[in-house]
Length: 146
Ligand SMILES: O=C1C[C@@](O)(C(=O)O)C[C@@H](O)[C@@H]1O
Image: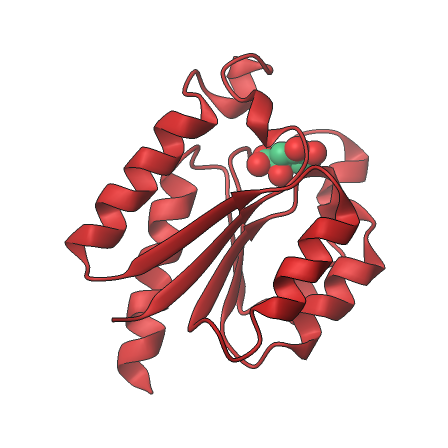
């Protein structure tokens, strides 16, 4: 069974309390339950973490080496400036999918730039919690191709 690592970055633990126009009304716990249900359906194992600090995200990405078959990451605001997270993703030899709940291209100018995109397999942005489900599907298809 493929092992998938899901990482939620800073402030995503506050979902439900954050601006619902961008992020929806569901809590992170709700979204994690939906992710787990989808993973079960497609016979994936998912390990889900939320980290507020950059260092914790990097440590987990480093640990993912040889441990996982794919990574789904919503790096939150770090997306826009963390070269350290970018470098940690670049080390991995498995598909890493960048996800965002909101469409980062129709918001503030500073959100339009993702420094992690160039080292990710692809990006899914703007579909609310469904972005994570689409990322699981994407990894499923990518692993079938191998
Ligand atoms: O924290 C977040 C969440 C986000 O990654 C999203 O999921 O839409 C978009 C980021 O710009 C923001 O800082």
